[in-house]
Image (cartoon, rainbow, N blue to C red):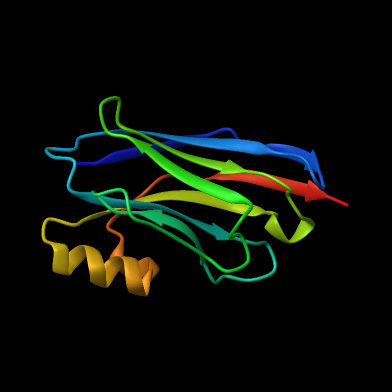
Length: 132
């Protein structure tokens, strides 16, 4: 059973930076697509933020491109999200997620669609609040 635990959230002013971390355990291989979703208090929708496949290919939401950077440490089983130039609209509960991507076809589909239902494993979330 894969277990994910996020950390690094907090309250910052617009323009500042935060780095989220996600520790993981229970993986049998490194063939997982990893990523981050966020959910604001105003909507139940979970917005796709950033994703990385087993080969290191990255995908970002348009709203965070150029500001956020996702990375993974397969040795220590960590996932990171470096967030710069934060805006009030980045406020939300950030979830670390994982999905098996054993084949390239699986990875391509999951990375292209980035749907919450495609990710089997979820952390408990870490809150990010950006004030103007």
